[in-house]
Length: 150
Image 1 (tube, one colour):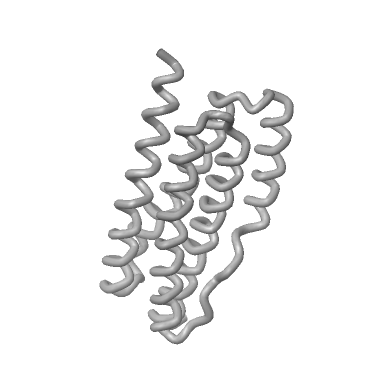
Image 2: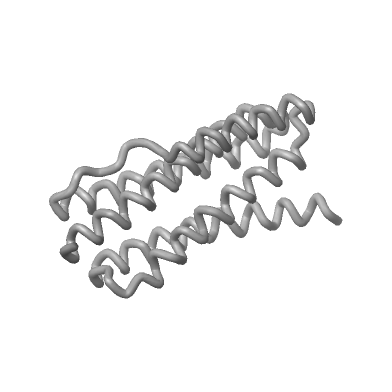
């Protein structure tokens, strides 16, 4: 596998995970009855859409075809989130717990990519910048989750 094709493959995996995150935030925004959470989730979904666009631009610049869909696993996760919201009556604590689980997943995906020593330097730089945004979103949701536990 050439360096460019490896870069494209890793980036497309991150695009799929980030699209999953967009879908998760969009879904969470519709499930919560807390206006502040809905605003937060919609804002994070928007940030992630911008992140997807940056990653897709890099894939195209490398000569690849950019991923445009999330993962099959994520669609199963959204079904679970929907079911959980119905069962819990749109319980914000349950929604935050689900969102945080998704955030743990995407954060781990980016950390795995950053530890990949076969990526080109420019792609590592891009992923590092994207990771900063992902980690900030993760930490914000984590802090909200912990506020429920106090």
